[in-house]
Image (cartoon, rainbow over all chains, first blue to last red; front, side, top):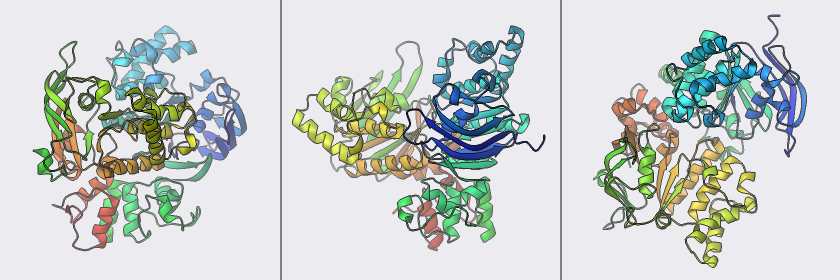
Amino acid sequence: MATEPYIAIADLGFSYAQGTRPALTGITLTVEQGEYVGVIGLNGAGKTTLGLCLNGIIPHMLMGEQTGTIAVAGKDPGVVPVREMARIVGMVFDNPEFQMSQVTAAEEVALGLENLGVPYADMVVRVAEALAIVGLTGYDERSPMGLSGGQQQRLAIASTLAMKPSILFMDEPTSNLDPIGKEEVFEIARRLNRDEGMTIIVAEHEVEVLAEYADRIIVLHEGRIALQGTPTEVFSQVDTMAALGLRVPQVTEFAYRIAGLGAGPVADPGARAGTAPGLTSPVAQLPVKLSTAIEWVGARG
Amino acid sequence: MTETQNGLPGSPGAGPILSVRNARYVYPRGDVVALEEISVDVPVGQSLGIVGQNGSGKTTLTKLMNGLLRPTSGSVIVDDLDTARHPVQVLAAHVGYVFQNPNHQLFAPTVADELAFGPRNIGVPEAEIAERVAEATEFFRLGDILTLHPYRISFPLRKLVGIASIFTMRPKVFILDEPTTGQDHRTTNTINRLIHELVDRGSTVICVAHDMPLLADVSERLIVMWNARLIADGTPREVFADRAVMERTHLAPPQITQFSMQLPGREGRAPALSLDELVAEYRTPGRLAGKEA
């Protein structure tokens, strides 16, 4: 029982009905309860599709052809109704405004609970709890449209938290937020992960942020898993990442170049066309956070 | 004063292309001051970055710059035109505004029509419109998608079309609102290159962004907005080095810049703006990354 992974995906493939190529191919992946996973990849690499497969929006609401198997907390999202999966996998998207439909913040949070048929007295308690977690206590009667972008995204998170999911999937949750809003959202996710043991999966372009927060990084490329491992394992593969059109944290690239591992800038993949990516070749472990990079430089003298 | 103190370029003898003089903006209903009195002169050909949290006054400032808003007091002069005296359509040929969300801007049935719409709207002759569309197609490398509906192309490409459809208006000043939002590393690099190329052509580019690595690379000058005020104005290096301003505004310089400011043995030196700079400093003993050429 304890050995059963919380999320188990085997050879998952998906092609959208109107798509010209598969959105996902041969995805095999396990996630343990309480992990904090960062998903990176170019636009169109399959990050969003993967999230939609986890909560059953694929295949229930978006048509296409799915192969392979998915088990999330022992349930098959392809069989279990979406509203039931919503109790397990909470989704937060990049544009909180699109998720807002109600007149007040409290109603916004209560909406999902009403759909689940939660009794009124319980609903009041859960709405208050969810608003408290995201720091919006006292905003109950405010209009969602009158909130700042960061507050709206926190409200979107509260709306999913009220359903008491054990997994939170966030799809570029801060791309429309300012730096303060971005920090608020990532701090809430970190707290939910550390204090509540919530499993966090976040698709994000900003690798510096993921290096700071995630336990594990999954790199998607054209619908396949190209790399996965700890941030140190993944981001140390500077050449491979560049060949995939992706970046590593600035401090990691600095260390890579100072250590004489790279001949020149790796920012431009074209400049390194001669170096074939060795996905499995061992590479030196490089610092991925600002603090460890400072120590790394200090240790080199 | 700001343009000379930083030794920034401007055509000798010519006035600034854009001059915000003692401009203040109060929303008509209510007493919310969106912008306290500010003055900014932007020389021809400058690449200016505007940073600040949402609600700090950045958008109000840029809307004053293209005449979408008129100052409650003070004045805004663009390319010798007082924005209070000319309609937005006239100003649009001088200062182009590229929206953060291209969906708010694009509505023609094909990309080609989208590129032609602006110049046609201001009465440019058809022969010249064709010429401008061809130029934009080449500059933004849109040849493969000209016949497609703007909603049939990817978001990053749509964003490029948004910039290109302003480009065909041939404004002297481009205002780009969060050009890299929702872009991945590859498409961010494309936007970065295009901004450099616009500046190389002599355009004045004003870029509002939270993307600090982008601004560290493309902007020669940064202004910082906070609480409806302009609170800092200098080169990116000067602004990033100002810990008090960064702290007060909760803004963070690029990671490599922060790193350079914390590196042991580098105390007192100006921060590095890019990886290339800091790596070069390490490889060449005695060279200071912070030294301006």
